[in-house]
Every structure is written in C-alpha cells, then in structure tokens.
Image (tube, rainbow, N blue to C red; front, top):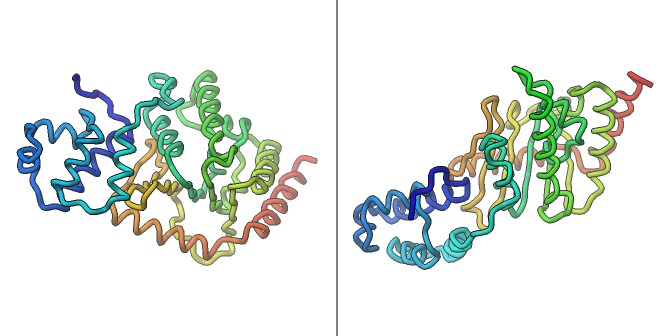
Length: 287
C-alpha cells in the first residue's frame, strides 16, 4: 500500500493518539513494533499517519500499551473505521489545506464553542459579510477566489444551522462594530445574528467593552469537542492560516479560558438586546 502523501487532520490525530498511548505506557517505538510483529518503520509510519491502522490493530496496540480507557479506545476505533470522504474534499486543490481542515474539524465535532474578537464567527456570517471579509485580504484576491471562499464558508454552516451540532459563540463587542462591507452589510449581519440566536442549538453571548477583563482577547478560537474529552481540539485563527492544538495542557488551559468567558459574557437575552441596540446604531448612519 502506498504511503499517504497528505494525511488529513483526522488521520494525523489518530496517529498522534497512538503515539501518546505508547509514550504513556513507557514504550519505545521499536519495542512496541516488536510486540506487534511489525517493523519499527511501520510503527513510525502509523504514528505519522503515513499508513492507516485497522480497528483490530488499534485494539492490539491499546492492549500492548495496557490502555484501560475504553471510551477513548472505542472513539479511536471509530476514527480508524472512517472511510467516507467529507464534502470539503471536492475543494481540495482549489482551496488551501487550512480551509479543508477547519471544515473537517467542525463536521466531526460533537459540540462547537467559538470566541471571536475581530469579526462575526464564520459559521454565522451572511454571504455579503463573508465576501467583504475576504475582500479586505491583502494582496487582494481575484473575484473568483472570493466567491469560492464565500461559498465554502456558507456550506460549512449547514451542520450548525440544521442543529446537528450544538454551537455556542462568544462574540466581543469589537466584532459587532467592525464594518466589513459598510454599514448596510453590517446591519444585515447583525439582523442575521439575531435570527440565529433564536434557533435551536445555537447560543450567542456578547462580551461588551465594559467587561474589565477578557480572557483570550486578540484571538479567534474554536473549541471543538470530540466524543471523549481526550479528543477535544483547539483551533486558532492566525494571519498565516489555522493552527490546531490538542496537547492535554493546551486543552486544559482553554477549558479555563472558555469557563471565564461564560462567567463574563451577557446572558443570551441580554446579548440579543445588545446586538439589537448596535444594529439600530448602525442603521442610523445610513437611514
């Protein structure tokens, strides 16, 4: 079987969890390989996701590593059993890998919690607003690229809009007031936020300027919960693209950050009132 040239985010995560399982057992790669009856090179390729691992082999690895965390083992077996390609794969070669991996992460999550400070979360953006966000990139993107990225972003929203994945967004007041595309586009976006806040499975909480501290400020973060806590993932937006974190220390840190956000943000009803007031202020600039 040929080696994978570009393992997906999920495939890499599975390899990472195999490595963690081995390291927690205090085993070296060569030592575990001998126990499994494979070469050290194969062991390395499994952990780097260059080759796949069958559900049966995964259970053998767990047994050899004395892993007694059955919920984690079952979740990893499910990952190893995945064969169906996601809808985002048809964009491979058209969009950068970051776009595809964010969509993959979101679609496999059991719950999504997002914190944004500079713009409305992508999963809640209108087409006009999303196009304006992409239009402000420098160097400028060709119109066709903007259209493709916008269509991709709207497609990503289906799982959240259909209530298939519970979704919570903490949105800083700065993001509500930043104008992408002008006041009319922003007013339309704020109206769409109000509508979304009434949908089943969607919770929108505002963090106003008046809050004295804002944990995680300056970062747009997504906390994607997996089927078990060990498979949670943090995704951070940066200028160069998307970063992903899954180390236990990173997950623990960001659980605290989001817990603090929960204690600081306005209630859902208070947030709706706040968004409505901002929208009315924006409308006054052009009516």
